[in-house]
Length: 415
Image (cartoon, rainbow, N blue to C red):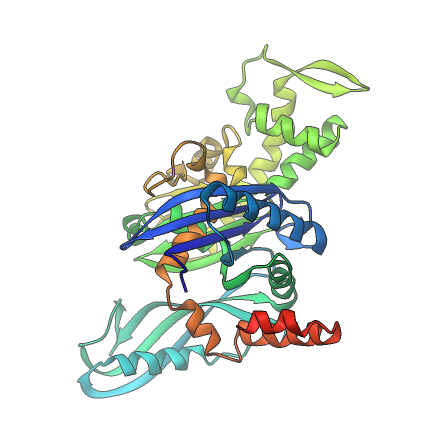
C-alpha cells in the first residue's frame, strides 16, 4: 500500500487543495513537504465544478511532488459536507461461558454492521466504540475475558454516493488512485489531539468551508456533526457589509478580522477599497460584522455538543483547527461562551511540522497522512469488499469509461 514508505494526504477543501507528503520511518512519520493550490470548484465542501477541481488537485500534487522529489500516485483523500452523517449501531453474540476469542469479536462487529443503508448512501467508516460483556460496560478489548454475552457498540459514518463519486472522479482524472476516503474531522483529530485528551474527553472543531465536529470520550469517538456555517460565511458577510469583492473581503478577514469588538482599540483604522480608492474605516466596523456570525457559529457548536449527553464531558476542552480557527479572538470568545478550555490545534508533535507547516490550515492534510500510517489494511479491506464504496465506485467508473470508449483508463484503475 505504501510505495517507498511514502503516504500522501490530499485535502480537497473549499478554498484550497493541499497535498501532504509523509515519509514513514519505523512506526513514526515525518512530513517531507506540502503542496497547495487555490480551490474554486467546491461549495461548502462539496464539488460543484469538476474541471477546476481537477486542475487544483493537479497543481497541489505537482507542487508537493516537485518539492519532495516524490512521484505521487496514491492518496488518502478527505471528504466533508452536510451529507456526512453518523449513526450508532449495536450488535450482540453468545459466548457460552468461555473466553472471548478474536472470532467472537469479528462476529459481534458483523452483527453491528447489519444496519439498513439506503442505496444513495455509503459507509465511510465503521468504528468500534466499546464492548459490553455480561452487562459490564466500557471494555476496550474483550479478547481473553470470560462471559456469556458479548455486545459491541459502533459508530458508523456515512456519506452520499454522488459527492463520493465526484470526488473519486476528480482524483482519477488527476491521475491519482484513492486508497481511502476519510471524513476530514477524523483526519484533523489525528494530527491535533492526543490520546490522553481523547481518553479524558475532547471536542475537535474543524472550521473550513463548513464546520465539522468530532467528540471523543474514554478513547472512543462519541459524536460527529457537520454545521453548514464556516469561513466562507464570514468572508461573505464582509463582502456584503462593505460592498466589496469577495477576494478583497477574504484579505480583510485574514489581515484584520476579529471575532469581538472588545479586543480592538477604538482608534485603530484600516483601509477599505471603495470606488477605486482606499478609505479609512475603524477596525471595529469589521469586528461588528464578524462578531454576530462568530457568536452564531459558537452557539451551533454548543448545541451539537449538547446532543451527545452533556457537552461538559469534553473535560480537556475544545481544539480548533482549519483556517477559520485563525480568526483573531474566536478562541477566546468560544472559551467564554462554552465554559470549556479552548485552544487552537497544532501539528507540532509531528516530525517535520515546522514553520509554516505547523499551521491549523494544514491539520487535515497532515492528519490524512497520519491516518494512512495507522490504517495500513484499509486498501485491502476495501478491495475485498465488492459491495463497499470502492466496488461500487469502480463499477460506476467502468460504465463511464466504457461509454466513452476509454477502456485503457479503466484497466489502469483496476490494476
